Length: 155
Image (cartoon, rainbow, N blue to C red):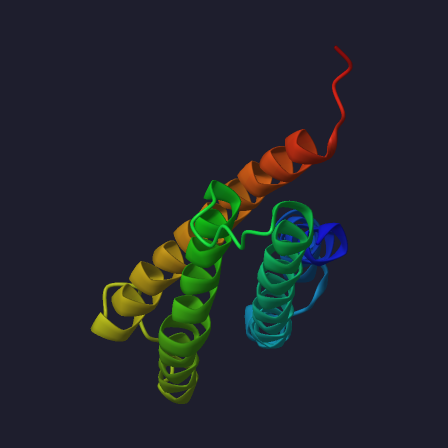
């Protein structure tokens, strides 16, 4: 459970605070940086989806083994479920549309930011960032809930 959580949350932290800013700072064009970030984000989303499902399966089995109950609506499971929904929405709805818009903007020379494609791209980017931030915050909540449940407090 913890490994799945660490992979997912650690990947988000690395992507948001190290990889994306570094790519835009060191690569010669924003297009090139955007291409790398887009590919990395897809990999991050798949890591998150696999990690989330792995966490849920392991946690449900752990609850069954420990308490002879699955507890599917435990708060940590609800949080991971929301994390999965946010990640899937970003991966399958927002990211593909952003790729289409980037391709449109790259094909049209010298588009101004006020054009509808740029405005839609910027709006989707804001939502993508919000969803990733939501996944990260919910992930911190799951870490706290998981750690709290696994720490033996002496009487």
